[in-house]
Image (cartoon, rainbow, N blue to C red):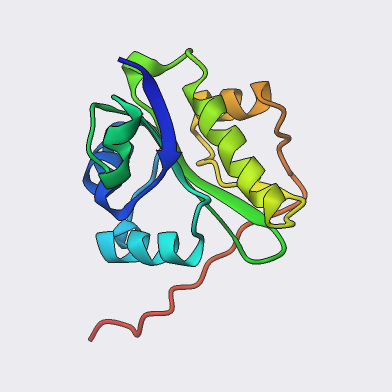
Length: 154
């Protein structure tokens, strides 16, 4: 069957989450709940993508064959961000990651965004190699800091 690239739909959540969960170097948290991913997709329409086995017509409802890859992409109006790019082991080294990334970057460019960032877990050696091979540069001048906005537990 052909590999089809299409927009990431809410109905893709279960297959994408399973792929992310099985992929070394992807960090999942409650931020990746179904409700949060659906909110992310609504906030960034047409920017996140999946690659699936199957006929083109099967993609409309998220149905079809095996999930080969998935990526979340969004922007804040100024900068783009890629999250959770994952490719199933059977599809690696076949251009799936590059194909997903190119679609995200084209969507960001169409929205007027001129720079994109990715977050790579520091010890994700394979992920870092992929990004470097595809032309991304490590920014050693930046440090990410986070703050939990939830009230402290009693």
